[in-house]
Each structure stands twice: as structure tokens, then as C-alpha cells.
Amino acid sequence: MREIAHEAITEAVAGLSVEANRYLPEDLARALREARQAEEWESARALLDILIENEQVARREEMPICQDTGMAVVFADVGQEVHIDGDFEAAVNEGVRRGYVGGLLRKSIVGDPLRRVNTGDNTPALIHTRLVPGDRLRLTVAPKGFGSENMSRVAMLPPARGVEGVKDFVLETVRLAGANPCPPMVLGIGIGSDFEGVAGLAKRALIQSVDEVNPDPYYAALEKELLEEINRTGIGPQGFGGRTTCLGLHILAAPTHIASLPVAVNVGCHVTRHRTVTL
Image (cartoon, rainbow, N blue to C red; front, side):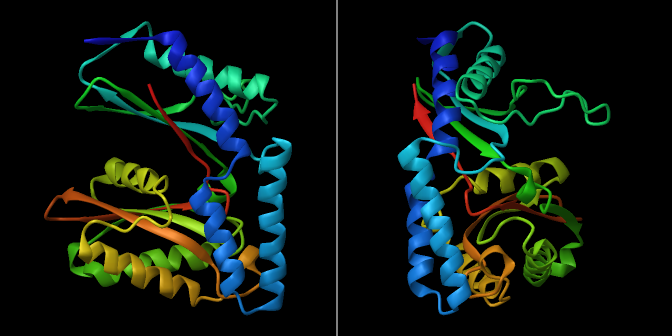
């Protein structure tokens, strides 16, 4: 049994909260540059130049890449041979508090959805924990802005709709979103499970590398088809037109009930941020 101190978790989460808001993942920064090279529309190229410059300035000046520094979504893969010395949830939230307060990041969380009083330190975080083999703790902090989050959708389709129903729902979600999620967007798509589970699949899909290929050839082909269809919508960077509406998308699928076909689309903006460390 390997012991991990709660203070080590706090320090890790604090650092990840700041770094994720300042430094875009390299795969996404590369995708923006590649989109700029492939873009044919002059206005779209100019907008992509601005987005690329913004990413570079944030990295160079160590400033938030977006003014919406998001809700702190934390994924924790906890090894079964790990013992955490202290309260894990409290350690994570203390890390978020330190990162957002000390890092001068915008605090966007209200303690109650209707009374709307800001908590003042961006806590509590939304924590997704799962047990995995081994004696390590893998932490990912994914600050989620809500301009894109508000464009996300879940549907409980009848099974007869099949793959065409899924494709129609994804494309409809993109068209309804339009310019609102600051495209070019990144999409996490969940298929299967149940009402709560499918949204979790979509959220987890959103933190995968944009250039990662689905290990299942069936879903790899579906991802490729959807990406091409989305980029044919012509929404383009920031909604001003062009061939680059989506930088990448991933599908995570899970078993489901015979009577339903759940599907969720978690929409991310062009700065879909996340940072990972293993303790």
C-alpha cells in the first residue's frame, strides 16, 4: 500500500489549475496552426491568426488564455493500492482555491444555482473519481468555460434511430451552437450508458488529445465522418465562415439498455483546456 499525503494532492491541483488556464495543450495548439494552413477563406485565416497569437501571448506572458477560467472539473484515477492520508475531496477543493486565488484566476462558481452567491474561490470543483489498478494517482484538471458548456446537449433516442439518429443529433447540436461556443470547437461525444452516464462519457471524451485515433475502427470511421460533416457546415472560426468549424472530436461508447440509445455532446471551445499529473 502506497500512501499519498493530502497536501501533495492540494499542491498538484493548485498547480494544474493555473497551468491549465495558461497553457493550451500542444495537440490543440498544433491543430489551430494546421487549420490556419488549410483554411481557404481570408477572414477565417485572419481569425485563426488572432486565436494563435492569443495562445502564444498567454503562454509567453503566463496569463489566462481566456477570461472565463471555467469551472474546475477534476478527473482522478485512484490506484487500488493507494492510501490517501486525509480527506481527498477537501484536498482537491483546497487546491482549486489556492490555484484560483493565488493565480489571480476569475472565480465563476455560485454556491446555489438559484440564489447565485459567488463562493469567491471557484470551489467546489466537480470531481470524477474512479478506481484503477496500481499504486498511482492520476489527476487531470480541466477548467470548463460555460460559453461552450451551455451549448451541450443530451438526448435519449429510441434505438430505431440508430447511427443516423446519432449523427443527426450531433450535427443539429453544432448548428444550434453556431458561433456561441467560440469555434473552432472541440466535441466530446458519449453514446450509451444511461441519462447520467452518457454525459460523463462525453465529458471524459473531451479531454482526449484531438489527434488521438479511436481504437475501435467502427468509431474511428464515425469520428472521421462526423468531423468532415461538421466542417462542411461553414460556421467557421468564431462563426464568420470557413472550413474550420471543429478541430477534433472523440466518441466514448458504453453498454446501454435495449430500450434506449442515449447520446450526449459536450461542446468545448477552441481553448478546451486540461493538464495532467501522476503522483
